[in-house]
Amino acid sequence: MAHETSHQRNNDKRWVWATLSNDVDFFQINSSRGQHAAKRLLGEAVSHLLMTDQYSAYKYIDESKRQLSVSGSHTKECHSYRGEHLS
Image (cartoon, rainbow, N blue to C red):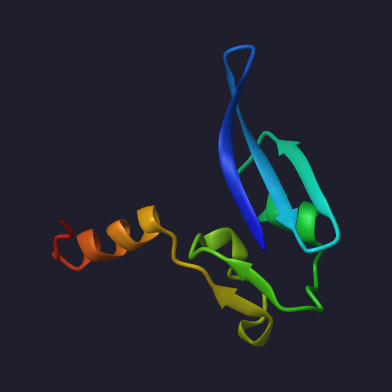
């Protein structure tokens, strides 16, 4: 699994990138949320199945190696985009 989230450091916005597995968790702080930061964490070529959200930085990963995860907040965003409402 890979994920990124914002992080404040000395009034500067940073991004905490994480990749998690059953055996190892790895975190990296980056000044960017872009694809360059994703590649810095995961490498140019992902050789294993990786779960991510739909954020565009992960789109460089071959579809056969990427499984989309839809968390509660991502589910709401998807429904909002379609004009649907969740209660």
